[in-house]
Length: 179
Length: 179
DNA sequence: GTTTTATGTCAGCCTTGTTGACATATCTCA
DNA sequence: TGAGATATGTCAACAAGGCTGACATAAAAC
Image (tube, rainbow over all chains, first blue to last red; front, side, top):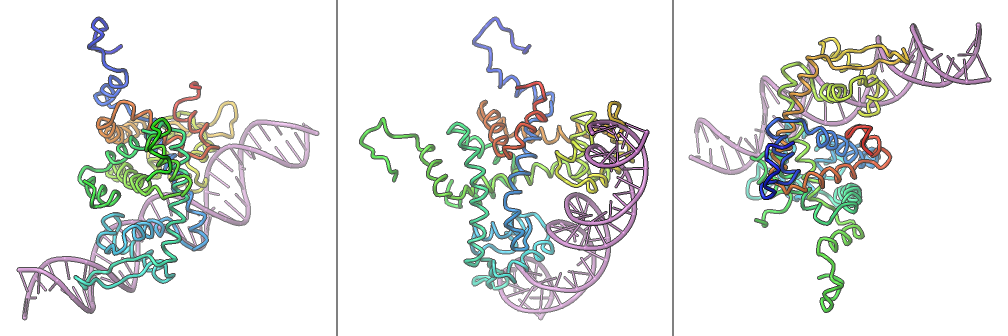
């Protein structure tokens, strides 16, 4: 089947490695991973929907609240960079989150043009509630897997991200301390 | 740090296992996996956007074309079940795909009320082009990883899906033959 | 003091989701 | 065979959350 002769076992590579190489060259579509990613993400983001509905929020609000709650003092520019939307789109949902007292916007101290965003106690509560909900799903999935799976999945997801952004995301996700 | 004494090494469990258990009990948010999933999906679905634009299509068209191309003879009902949208939403994009000759709708033979959807050659070409684009990203990510990563990632994504849907998705993704 | 930067805001448009109501053809079953 | 269920199509209205373009303000930077 492969291009490597069977005669010399030492030269025989593992089957998955052969498969990988063949797929890269032929670009055989990875339908399984494409579709599983679609279905998994669909269900993953749907968990918080019910709760958000109760507050009159949508997924856009969730994303904003999540990152502000995770990184107190986040600026508008940084948030725009994370979400990759326009400031007009951001402003619509951010305004609502501020009006309903889930997020607070403080003037920057070093640079007074900046707005430093902070979640209010109410905002942190909601963000945590939603994160726990998604964590439950993640933990259930990891419980089925080998202990090494979490590391493998993390690496894989990180490698899917645009190379230019990878360092940025690493700092964001794992903290600026970790090398 | 742990609750298990260091004195008897045999009782010491692996660190990742301890971590997992603690996180399940305390529901410590899995911020890393939550956020990596967000960033990875953001970049993953953005690849096809440019190409779709050239055809005047959006992501909704992509999803429809993908599943029809993958499963010739798919019915409207089955497609609605996969995408979890309303028939009105589906119809809008499906109509455009049919008008522009990327998808063909044939009357069912056994049940003539059904529409059996098929990608045209043009439709298959576009679907394949988009799938290859996403596959390139996936393969680059897997190339960084150990050979066992693909299996681990597949399992993880599948386990993230709602339990009720898992069998359905399995059949869809891996084919109805595989047990 | 001029220019650049960070943010806010108005107005309008697009895609893609929603609900509700109703029409048609076909199948199923008593 | 005739009543009801089913698969699909369609009209209308609406909402969320993207987008562009234009313009305003305050503060920083040079």
